[in-house]
Length: 232
Image (cartoon, rainbow, N blue to C red; front, side):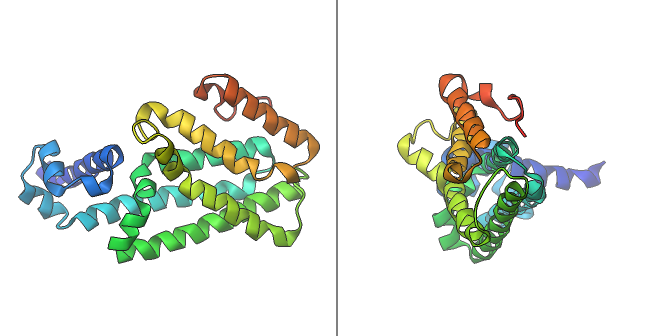
């Protein structure tokens, strides 16, 4: 059993670090604070993660793995309901590692490995959004020309990437707190989907308006994906 202790300690370190980064922002969390929160010595922390960048990279690797699995489902999106569910799921992963997005520019300026990895992830996300768009076109939910898909995917990705930063600027004290999670994620998914509105088939446009109206008129979690009757 003693052989498993180091792995368990390393896991606990990442769990606590992620929570602190999300609550206070990565620049405001020192390794000393992490060790104090865990009630371990700084030396014990450094044994597992000799530098703060190694904590960041380990957390990013988890995020990238989870996001990569999720992006595989982009080609299965057929209509607005599917797209709403997919985008909400993407925002759930982003929310779980939200420090990466709130502090993205600062992190990239200090961590060259992360700079390369994030660029690759953005490319994968853009490709996934293109698959989403082409799938909706094939199913008759969306009407765009083939050469429009890359540009539209880029616009969607920009909103998706910087939505948490925008929400934080509007309400720094509350937007990224746990009680705001559902509201922030659902609002973000709706804003990304609004980019498709002019190109949606009429029934799909009406369905999106219905989703948006339900979002505005009730509690955030009342419009979680899958709670509306599907339209095909």
